[in-house]
Length: 154
Image (tube, rainbow, N blue to C red; front, side):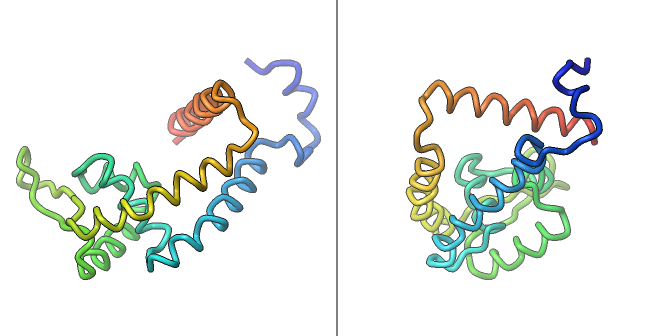
């Protein structure tokens, strides 16, 4: 499965081409540059991820929310408790399974997320400056494939 380009690199790491390094570096700057928008709204990055997922899914089980946001369950529980105190989310029993809990945004949480979404989209647009629509779709497909590869490694 290893192609020639990979075998030629086995004893060296060129950080200008090493994908994990490039992904981390890009992720770090992307988040750092966006966090000032969140600070203006008094929202943490974890809270934003949660609100964005809740606006998208409307309601979601705790475990699925943790996976979707890439937030560890103990951290998720703490962040959700803080968000409940601020009336941004609520946790209720699932209609399908009363033992399960689902998380949903409150009206205030949804309104806050909708105030941030245009800033998030503008940030994405700036990030993708110079990319064609086809390149953006290709990048999305590649990132999705990388993500699925990592899920299978767990």
